[in-house]
Image (tube, rainbow, N blue to C red; front, top):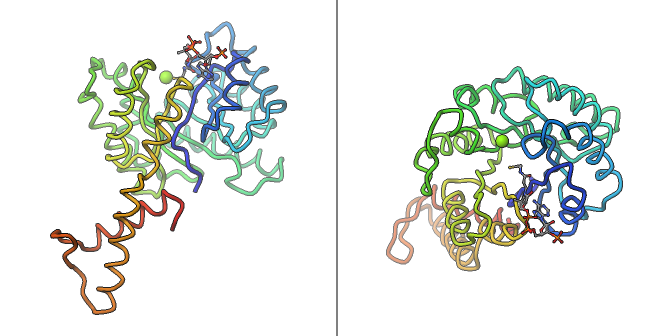
Length: 286
Ligand code: COA
Ligand code: MG
């Protein structure tokens, strides 16, 4: 599965930022046609993003494009322009129900055939960022063709009329629900963003919290956030050493027919072993 520790947005109307993103070694770059672009620049952004997909060398960075919402009158033109240009994935914002997701997945499947790509060759990342999207999470997560769920805290809070706070308690229920539904359907989940891009300590705190909740990456909006976030979603040397120890001890005890055992004065059984295996997978050492 592709690592998307940091997913960096930039307005599709801003060539300089797209060019810059191509050289940042960020896991995923998301060329935005939606909230980052003013209504009068939508057509111009569409053209620039198509050009960027054709002309810029993003190296190992995944090239995603965020189209406008399924209930907007822009999405048809967005998909018609972007899909033939062969992005690595589409981000669908403000997903409200499974029918919307299905329609986009069908368009992607047709484009994959036209581009002679394997099914799933163009990813579909679905943003949950409204009350309705949250209520319909199960059907959305179960929709064929979905590659990942993405939690959008700002739009979600605004849809609820919730007031944003530094500790984010007003979005915690939705934030947890998104990652739980993603896990239930075998999908990775990408966490909310930290808008105060000058506050690296706040970003670090939020990223660590997201990783603890089970997210495998988060959205970012500024180049300075990329290294902080990519490090936060990479297992540390201590985590890897501990995981290796747990797995080695488990294998020894398995031969002796023991399920639960003690390691460094603490009980270890299957959930801890699975967590250790996940750490190794995230470190690319499984
Ligand atoms: N992607 C790529 N490059 C970016 C970038 C981004 N998201 N944000 C900033 N940069 C670049 C700038 O171009 C600048 O490079 P340069 O001086 O070589 O041209 C450098 O990083 C430093 O930028 P800085 O001056 O600190 O920021 P800014 O004032 O130009 O921009 C924002 C601040 C918030 C407007 C900008 O980071 C941004 O547009 N973020 C994305 C917004 C977005 O897409 N929102 C919708 C999705 S939530
Ligand atoms: Mg938004």
